[in-house]
Length: 266
Ligand SMILES: [Fe+2]
Ligand SMILES: [Fe+2]
Image (cartoon, rainbow, N blue to C red):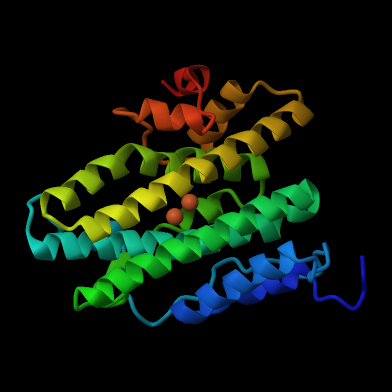
């Protein structure tokens, strides 16, 4: 390691502790860019924060207190849906940064590269949806948002296998199942711009889930465990929700969630 370079852990921690959304996007992009350019030392001299910094808006509410978005085709309902997705991408930035900064020391450079690449993707997804909200006369922070998306990070902070089993392989994989219907909903409302943004997001998410499944497989091999069985055990221990169909089988398969893996959870 070159002692004069800033460390990757310090750069990641600083991005996680940046509250302002625009600044967090810029900080995340520069961590990913500097890492790829060899400008950050592979060194983990600081720990990751338990909770990342959050802007004053949106107000975070427990899921039970979130206003109902409604299933209908109203413009307000669609705006609230874009806001909810924008918030998910905002939290996803920190989830990817945290994976790289928390588990990078034990998992190595490729792991750091993959999750910093994911963090940069999430920053782009957030920026696209935040810009869409502004074009539609709203903005990120204009509505309350779901407070609970960090629970999975807290619950799996002790073990990289648990983190991968739950965050990319359950939560992000769920996005592969539901996003095609969301895209159809925007297309039906003639909002093709939002539909295109969501299509780009889902294409990237297939890769994120694939990073999850492939790093999980490596951890399983090192621990002498079968991936389907360990996945089931960790999901049962650390994920409160249920993993249930309908599944987007083709997207899941291209993300490495084979029939054998899915059968383990059934
Ligand atoms: Fe995303
Ligand atoms: Fe993602």
